[in-house]
Image (cartoon, rainbow, N blue to C red; front, side):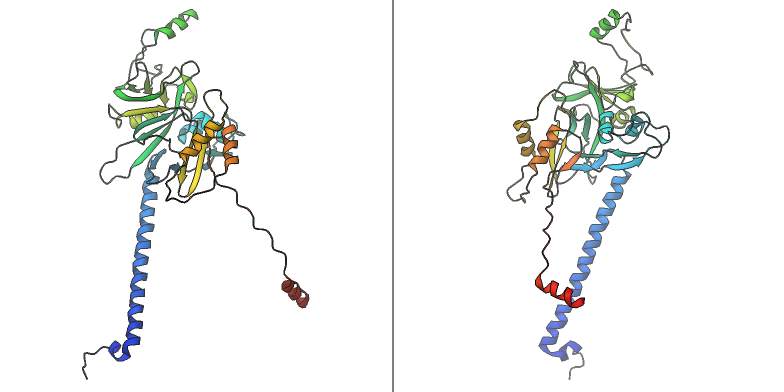
Amino acid sequence: MNYHTTVVGYLGPWARRAWLALGVSLLLLVLGSAVGWAEEEGARNAAETAEAWPKGHYPLPERGDVIGEDYVIEAQAEQTLLDIAREHNVGYEEIRLANPEVSVWLPGEGTEVVIPGRFILPPVAREGIVINIAELRLYYYPPARAGETPRVETYPIGIGREGYDTPLGKTKTTMRLKDPAWYPPRSMRQEAAERGEPAPAVVPPGPDNPLGRHAILLDIPGYLIHGTNQPDGIGMRASRGCIRMFPEDIESIFDRVPVGTQVHIINQPFKAGWEGDTPYVQVYESLEAQEYGMAALMETLAMLERGEEELAVALNYELLRELLENPTGKVVPLTLPETPEPEQAPSERSLLWEELEV
């Protein structure tokens, strides 16, 4: 007998195959556990990284169009809804729409306030700066360095009031100015003079300067992205056409937006997109008086078109029409409601058992 013969050798062919199958199963179990741990660790690291980012910064979805989450906080004593909005990176109209029953000026200590922090990315190229005036929000897609997670940043803005519409189209940044002087336009000086309030030809840097401390000039004469000395106007149509940001927001992007960055200004009151296999829509009030008809419906549906290889999902057209007619600004799943399963009538057998138990 060969003393080097293993125990498996004594067991015969069938037993050897069993031992081999057991070994393969154990190996697959170990590998599966390792892969699962790696996936969990990767997801945990990504979540921790995202939590470390400033408010309004999100990982750019590899597939899909939805970022962020809505959440609820409790108001503190003496806080206004505008204070809460600024602290949580949302504007006036957004916070008002999300909390229609809450007082703007004194919500009251302990009052629950919904923070609308969930967005569908605008349906245009994800590069440079995208400004959607219909939702009063700016999106910035900073270039990702090697090994860096691609991200999108989004900020509430103020835009031109009626009669001073913010121009649409593609442009670019041309210059960055810190502590800029403001030169009131001739039309504004004439209006002030007619009211008996002559406006100065120039306003130097300081607390009275409506441009704030940072301004990014656009390749559209007279138009800028700038800070403000009146932050309560963020999230409203309050400017003479320029794009206003909270002072801390424009300061955070000021040095990171290179001259020549593309700026795409759109007016898109309704957005649609996917997260996994779930379709979503987000509808805002239009800046112009208009009725949402078949054209708006078809445009929204076109945003949800997917490749033939992807799973088809039944859409809730009735809900979509309702949202187009009554905009809320919320990200809403466009799926059909689940139909409850009909209750089954008791079978004769179950009735018999009930009688026996009695």
